[in-house]
Image (cartoon, rainbow, N blue to C red):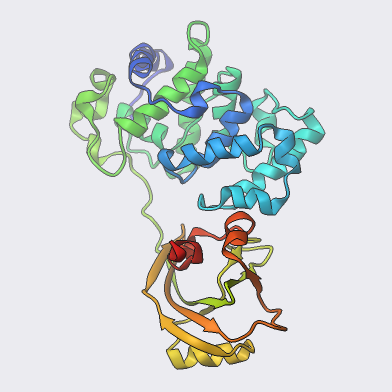
Length: 358
């Protein structure tokens, strides 16, 4: 990595903050950056696009305006609020942390970088974001955007997938934040770096160097290697699984069942499904095993859902059954109940009875 001292890196502070003040997107969590708001937004933004998060964030805070509300909300209601955001363990960890905050910190996030990291679901990055943005602490928040910006500024060939690289950048930035805290708010600098990475020094394509306020300070731009950076590990191949999904209806009710308490999509509700791609004959045999009698059956289009490490390739069947009397394998829900009470993962979105009803 090219050597760049804290004193030299401080040169980026003023032009970056001036650019941020002029060009920053208007986002709901920036207008009122309380510790709770910053925390919720940062957790929601993990693995999720900003435009998607906006609506969820506002609805979430309307329903759960305080940490106390978050700690006390029934889990199924919480998961319903999170429905469609994916990575549901984020929501579960939010509630675990909220309960701990209520017990240990009187319902307020602690203004302490180390204590924040001891809460479920809060790692170094999220603790740094909450600490700097909400509390004005001189602590770094190094996410993918920041790693990319710094790698290009430094023309660094260090692998950003390695923890040692992340720690190196955290320590460098923390030194800068301590130094600049006398003149600038650490949170503004943290958000400006993230914004630059999201909007200008972008991933998955050519960086917009001609729009960058740090162009003259960027060693990768000077050397013409910005597009080749950062260096990181390749993505691991996903495990592919085949599934047959059953959209079972009877008397305006739809069959759903709860997933196990642990594992992928734990505690959520799902449409009945089995491993493998079944023929229509095999589907009818499966229905017999469930003690259900087929009235009509229609094959649906194929669908795919991609998780981080798993890919589901699905085929669906819409099936009307004769009777659900004495059938206790499934919960038979109305469309309205499904909309209001039962969180159905996006993985089943292509076969969702709510979408199919229009």
